[in-house]
Each structure stands twice: as C-alpha cells, then as structure tokens.
Length: 66
Image (cartoon, rainbow, N blue to C red):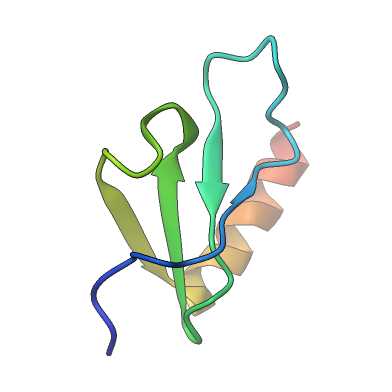
C-alpha cells in the first residue's frame, strides 16, 4: 500500500467554511483508504488514514447528529 501522501488531491469538508476554525480535508486518491488532514496545516501536519469501509459509516453517523 502507498504510504506517502505527496501529490494527492485534497478536498475540503462540505461542513468547512471561512468562519470555521475546524476544517478537515480528505483525499479520494487511494483506493480503500481515506486520508484525512487538518486544512490549516495542509502539507505540514499529520495525516490520518482510515479504511474506506470504516469511513462511510462514520460519515453517516455524523450526518445523523447534524
């Protein structure tokens, strides 16, 4: 499995906006893995990687609480 995240395409969470201090970005470039990073630290901060099979249920749970 690819472990470096250099050169990935990132997209900001749809819940992020210019007024929010808590923004995350995700990448869809790695099959089976969802890399997540803090948009304020883009390129310099850590990246967390989640199995895609765990990411979808997590997003559904967040949507139910919103």
